Image 1 (spheres, rainbow, N blue to C red):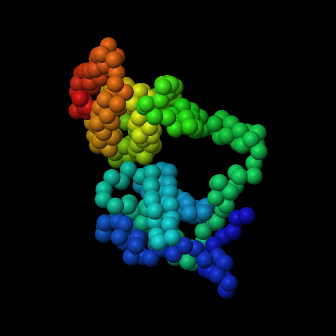
Image 2: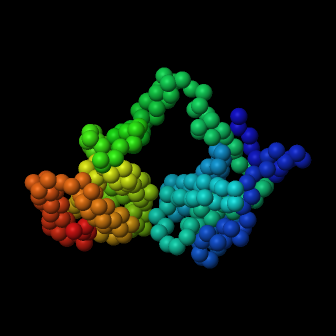
Length: 297
């Protein structure tokens, strides 16, 4: 069922989660809040949709296409927020502020839809597969995401380093493919006012796929994931304007510490350790040859 939430009715059944202007003001700088207030007042915000505790909306900006805002609500305010704009300053951007201000105004119409978990819960396996295939047909990135998610799943039964049987080696190829697509979009094609607009959150998600393996004591598979991302980074930043992308370079630099932790954990034989050192050295040399300032060694 879909209903439009406006002013609450007498029974209060259409009451939406309350967010105070003070809460919104505390999430952003004074400048971002004032700009967000302007956006909220000039009808730049559209298509507010609430699915459970997830709120999405479009906000007209300086680009041709509107920016997309994703907000996760909590009982006492906002649990998280993300916008597709390139803002990298302190606090939330003006687009997030604008959406929250519109949402906080009970006169604003908000489409309320069923949460995805509830929407899909009654589907049988064949119908769910059919829906996924339809989406994959029109969105190649979705298929890459599914492949990377499945390739990096931990076994159902948790394992320990002391287990007699070695953990099964994962295939990092899907991780590398998705990393290349994300980096290509971020470093080459999707720039706005000389700033990258690709999703750094998705890149961070890929890096984070290695952390459960580290926690489980499986340095080998953690290292496979991170090496795939490093190789993709080196390939994609070659000949690009990547040096201006501070977020991507910070993320890349963080891989150094994680890879060191993984290498120490997996206790590589001397010959394999030499191969790893040589591989990392070759990647660093390629970056140096391209004049890049990125480094993990």
